[in-house]
Image (tube, rainbow, N blue to C red; front, side, top):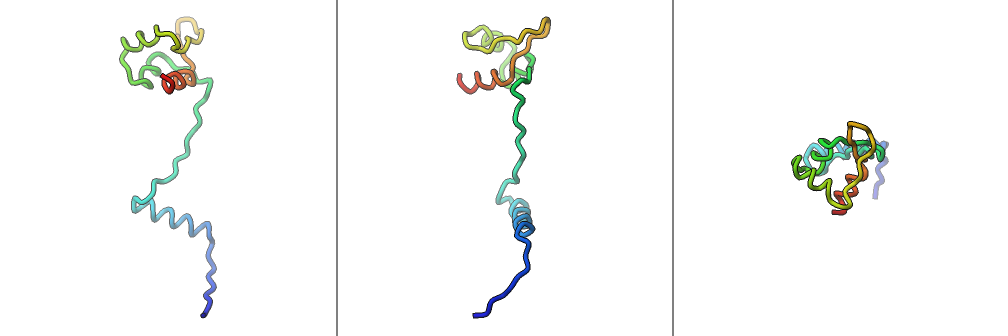
Length: 91
């Protein structure tokens, strides 16, 4: 049996293979996911958009026990995005 020696950069080969698979729709390219800022504050509009609810439904939910508390900002009610996400995941 004859041996064949190849000079191949494995990283380059892997990258080329990944590109070909993605072009053919056989794999989905990796997307870098940003980690949400745990201290990010959301307005009522942002909370409604995240939850996918109307203004009236938002005010109903806001009055239910367990809904995240408002972060004290006079004249600008805000909620911690992390608390809204956790509430939505647990309801």
